[in-house]
Each structure stands twice: as structure tokens, then as C-alpha cells.
Image 1 (cartoon, rainbow, N blue to C red):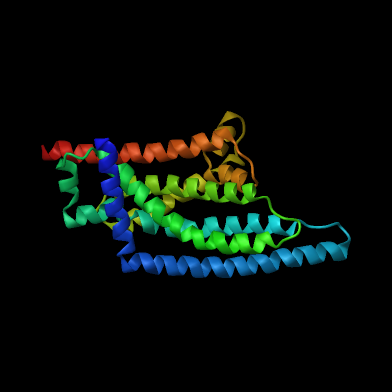
Image 2 (image 1 turned 180 degrees about the horizontal axis):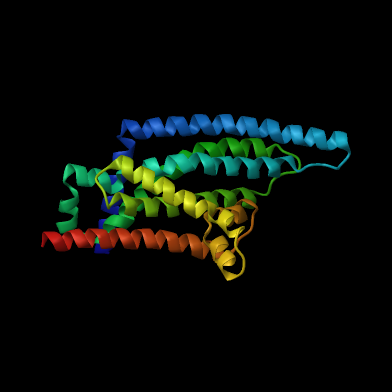
Length: 260
């Protein structure tokens, strides 16, 4: 119970810091603006595809599903630039202000601090997605044929799991430096590698190719937006999340050991 209380205390502290930061509102505004523009463009593109399909006589096109898959793909790209900015200050700012040493020497466990901070930034990211999901649901609810709600939920669940994985690894990178810019750049680089490693897999063969495809976040995210629940995808995202939290806790433990 004490550990849970510590996690909740760190979580509230972290979440409050986001909602009281002007920079966070700038990020939210840009994200909502870009998401709205992309959704409109994707909607027009899906409608155009349906019209061309009817004219060519190739049969009906599942416009709602096409819209959802394409939009979630673009939403992941927007998040590609957003997530490093959200994770870059998780520990870098603590180092810069000198409060990281206080956290390292406090009775709160390293795991509680890491989990609390991660939950805070993930909650903020989810709040960014909620308005987007509302207008998605409004449009898709009027579509024919109707999109199954489970497909939409799974797609956004995959997006949140992928984002949590990136934020967890970004949190670890942030704990290594007091430069928020460097933390953001390194997180962006790591994210690109983990998203696009399946492209490398195309140039190799055998077990190495299978391993690289399995490590790719993009491959497993694609399963979710197609409405496929794959245990291996859940395990992979869970592993990345655990790895980020574990490495962050070890970094803070090393700092605690230096101060003792």
C-alpha cells in the first residue's frame, strides 16, 4: 500500500506539472490542429477512393475501415514527433533543477518514481487522444457499412501501447542527461529504429529477418489497427515498457549509490 501511495503521489505531481505548463498546451494545440487537418484530408481521400472504385466497376470499397486505418497510420506519424517532446523533460528537468538528487535520496523507491512519472505522461497523451476519438466516433457512427467499435478501440489501444513503449524508453534516455534537447533527439532516433527495423528485415533472410520483424513496433501496431489481437504484440509492447522502467530505476539507483 505504501508503494501504491508513493506511485500515486508521483503520478499526481507529474500530471499536475503537465496541465500547468504552457508548453504542454502548445503541444496539445498543435496535435489537435494537425489531427483535425489530417482527418479531413483522410476522409476526402477515402471518399475519392470509393468513387473511383465505383466508376471502375471494381466493387464497393469499405470507406469507413479505409478511413480508420489510414488515419491511425497518420496519427502514429504525428505522435512520432510529439512523444520525444513529452518524454524529454521527465528526468532532464529534474537534473537541471537539482531535484533529481532529492528523488534519488528520498524514501520513495526508484520503481515508484519511474512508474508514477510514466503513468503521468501517458495519461496526458491519452487526454490528447480523447477529443480525436470523439469526432472519429461521430463520423464512423454514420457510415455504411458501420465500423465495429472493437476495431476502433483496438486501433487506439495499439497506439497507446506503442506510445507508452516510446515514452518509457524516452524516460530512460531523459534520466541520462540534463539536456532536454539531447534527450528528445536520442528518443526520436531510438523510436525510428524500433519503428522501421522491419525495413532492414527485408534485406536479410532467415531467423535474423524474423527477429527484426518481431522487434518492429510498426509491425505490431499494424496488427492492432487491422483489428488483430496478437499475444506476441502485447508481449513486445509490455517488454519495451518494462525495459524502460527498469533501466530508469537502475539509473536512479546508480545516482543514489553515488550520493550515499
